[in-house]
Image 1 (cartoon, helix red, strand yellow):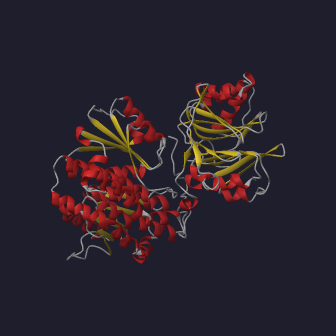
Image 2 (cartoon, rainbow, N blue to C red):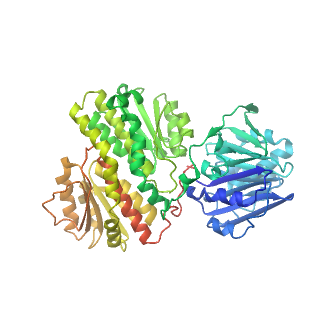
Image 3 (cartoon, rainbow, N blue to C red):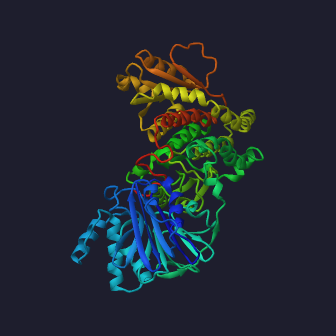
Length: 603
């Protein structure tokens, strides 16, 4: 959520370095953008509402700079406009800020008494005013930054420029991502590695409470007023890994990457058969219950995991929404395991839920895509999804990788508890080998997905129904559709239709019915027939090839049949593709849906 980039150097760099960095952070979500830079001793600030191109068209990209900061804002305090956009300037300070200052109103009233006036509606201008006030009291920027943590409550990643030190860039972080890029006679700050990837692959991860001073030739890190040692990491990403590589959208590219992501995520645990899975994963048998805590699509992955773990391993699983978990009585027991799932590893609600679970003394496991992220550092144990960098706001490949790891946990437990036969294991391992080719097969059905999108384009309400794991998949399919096509859709447990929801079915209402669980297929089909008899346009997504009865659907999408443990990884692909084709047909912003952000770092 939001993006920060900062530069300090003595190379012949221009304003372009800030704009290019912000471009690479557009995927995080934003509604305005701005930059501040010093050129020939003069401070320049330019801010614009809307897309980054609006700012780009207003600045001289070739104007040389020695130091600068840039920001893409996702509105929290105040409307989306140029006045509220960052950077903000008060006194001698110019700053950019991600996060939320929770006590900004109280601070604002106190600062007004000190004579400060405010032009924007933002908490960031309040923060900048506070920094200016503290600097007037103690003419030492490092002391001021260290004092901030005692003055402000909330989350923040801040880039700071000061008129008195025009060759120094400052940064401070608390529960909002920020890294330092290490260059040759130039250094950077950024919300994420892709912003600096074409300049340097070397970076430093800032931890909560860290603050830094950067010049072109030196980086100094501090914590609680003391110097802190740091480790320079080398990113394994390269510039091509964050390009579209010929695809019209990042989302389509990432959907097509799922076969390879599946192999990269699963193969390390099954490279030498089932024994590798036991050796490379924690011992899950000591836990009487598993809690899965997540947000959005990660929650839906958790719901699939719940079905698989309970079915194959006979272990109770509870799935909680992270934003609710933090403020609920959880009744955790010491022999429970809390699994937290996050693509970015920085999702604030999930991070806070994790910290609460740790405080209550239970073991925690993170399923994370981003190495060295906050959740990865705070979790007792970590399993990494190998999805690579995911740029599109609507997750696809990271979701699939999360489901894959949860299915491996189910298999690990099933094998450890002797609940699966040798033949059963052989069948699963065979399907593991074949799954990428089945995924590729589904990805080739483009015309089928386009035709389905055309048939539902003109409807304002779309319903997804299923039972068991198919209901969990229906929730993910519905979320994808509404995220990127802005079409209202809802997912319902198929058996609940007759308890009220079926009243919403009119002639032509699109209903996507999912049937892959053979044990309850007849029940779900009965529910599909109920909506069909009331005029629904039924898109039937199923692994049942030889369906004798064909009068209850209008279109049928056939999914290759594999072991139930792996079936969800195939079922989700048509749901992703239908959503993509519908959004494309409607001309929506597919990679950057309105009002959404990739990494949600505010509550």
